[in-house]
Image 1 (cartoon, rainbow, N blue to C red):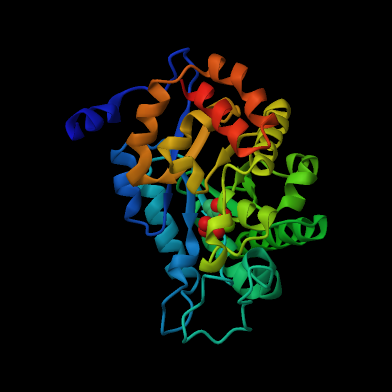
Image 2 (image 1 turned 90 degrees about the horizontal axis):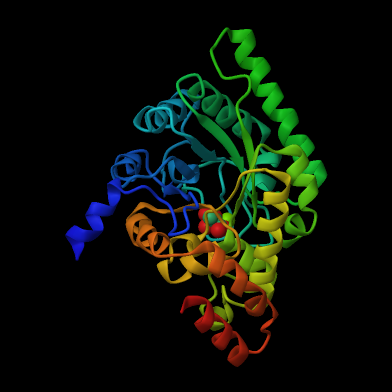
Length: 324
Ligand code: PEP
Ligand code: MG
């Protein structure tokens, strides 16, 4: 059984009805890219860069140190895309004790991710320069977490331009056309998706946070964990809507939250029209096995009933039919 799964590494990732699917890896450490590539990932869909910043007793890594780490991933991936998500600290992810910067929020509704980066422009610019320098060696791309406001998008692009200018003045190489993507993980962003479609090169749905904020369930609070439900009809309808709008606009759309790596949900995501999945590398072959067994045309024909099933019993029936 394990050997059979291993053989899938070399199989083309397509459904029974020949729909090509792209599987990307989520990584936390640069060396995770080695496993990702071995398991057949076609890129890094999410490099959680904050792991370079957390659990440190010393100062934050400087530009050169960050550049080395990003460059390592880019080199390991041999020209495949690498989405480097800018630092996502705050809420459940704390900075190391030795870091002397303004407090990050401890609430999931507080100062975290891009909100924090925009209050610490020097730290943000340092990271942007490091990513830009890595882009001279391969397909490093910038991915921004937790955006919701047009003003945040403006400010983010202003700082990206500034980082480019700084490198230009120093005479350092970077890809001036580096791709910039946004995570869709706040319901407000999903509700104004055309704003994001117009301004970014690619989108990635962070279902972990999108579920947290849509259902008003703190991801880290065990007392409400039983209400954290990826199958809530509101979540399924929201996902269907985001994927549909992005596909119509021809902008690449992926899911990089835990849902994408759950083989029990693969057919459901295919039915919603998803073609780009990003997951922890340990899940790649399990999800691939589901994809090889799926018929997207048939799944899509059965999804409207799932989306209209608001009662658990009706939903269970509709899902059973979908998976049969
Ligand atoms: C998400 O929110 O789904 C996501 C991928 O990001 P993180 O889990 O790091 O917040
Ligand atoms: Mg998130």
